[in-house]
Image (tube, rainbow, N blue to C red):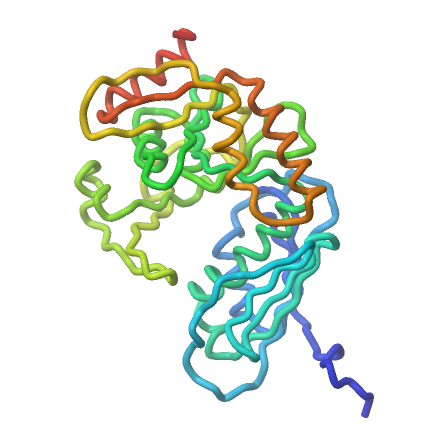
Length: 319
């Protein structure tokens, strides 16, 4: 028998390459359920990039332990990031090489939402981001071929306004979690147009959501996570960023769209840059400055219909 104390030679016979946001990612595992979870996440994306894939190897042990360990947040230093829930459930990724590996117990591997939220989605996106993207706290919709980014912190209204625009005929790209392609000088952004995630109060704004039941995400927050195919929306996986609008949602008062200070906009956008070596972060900051060559506005609003009409006038008439 070969000496293999670190289990390097563990057979991982299943290999599948998918294209999250259009960029290649290879999943290597010995568990078909891991691949099913990945395909549920990214199986509809078409390849748009010819770069080599990042790779995640996830081995599933034969542990008889049932149940899930208490989740913990990822931790990182330099080019390494780890998610360690216990000694049998962990994933470590090297941002510099585009490679990650981990082990899971069968009980955890069979829990698709748990694997997706805590392990698969964050590590695949971190590896892809380190190679290709700058993260943006923004949604994106498109009208007449012009992309408009809806920027803001949590509860600024990115999802509800993105959806309000989409149901009025705009093309939906993303409600949040947008990525800017760093190597592109054309301000190209990519998102996930196949899902939209609402907070439960959105059912009061959009009657067509009344029949959907919120579920508790692995982070404990209730959510309505819907496939956009159910909502009959026009969608696109990427767009050119022609306008940036920073949202300032209020409960009442005056509504207006005004020009916004670019340095303030840069400071807000930079808050999404939170991991990786300094050389990577600097590349991401430089790409944000290129993004801000587009017109930048702030919109104070409380009425969704007014906001959609005002954005439409901006795109159609430059007003």
